[in-house]
Image (cartoon, rainbow, N blue to C red):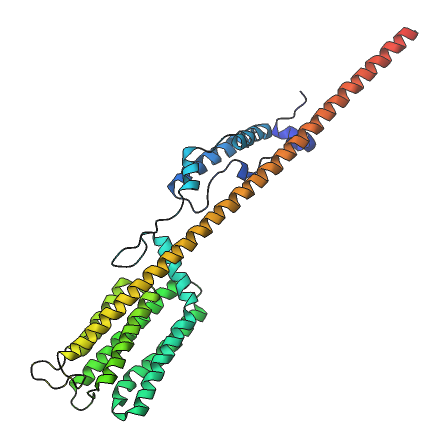
Length: 347
């Protein structure tokens, strides 16, 4: 038929060879798919290795891949490739580890200004409290420097650490450490007579509100369960363990059990509001994530179809050129035969 099929023939006469099939013409895999893609990849690699010995065989493999439907493994990946969006009821984390990492990476970067604003407001509140009541100076001397340190550390991590998932983990550890240090110092101040003032009812409400906002911020920042449990324990033990058994050194003027009630209510309210808000944020993130993946699948399918259409066009053009060359050869042979016959007749 005049078709050149060997590799050497293609190298000596490239125009006579069919175009090489694109990889996308044989592969139905999705980049973010799971175990089912492995079977597709192995099948594609086998096709490529078999087709590499002959350009014509590669063309045949591409034609079969473009005409046949994908196998069950490949189609299941395209149809069911979405990650597991289940949220654990206690830890408030996705069961899919890659999805959880992506969420924390995005939240840490996006919530930078919100975190800094919350810390600035907390520090400003302690400074304003001293201006209003000088007896609160010991408390402000504990928490105001910690707020400044948190501002600087958060900014440093945000600027100099490119891996946002690692930055989220490091930032959570630093924040937890600062709260542990602050609550420990406040508990020591309560143990020293005359050092920690017994705050009034309205001031106690404001302090409890700060802790509630802290727990809400922990949930909105997707801080891990272990860190949240440590902070709940530190806040509760630092303020609810004094003033019992005749000890008058409670942290409010109301004394026990109201001191403990303030702390427990702050913990419960902050955790409940933060829990509900985090569920809403996680579900919204998962919905956006699924939509992005579906868009990626559509784009990848269109790209594969574009490459297949381009390959079909090149293959058709090659067949037309080959047929033209063959027809020209037949025409030349027929012309030469006719001319020879005419000469013989003349003689």
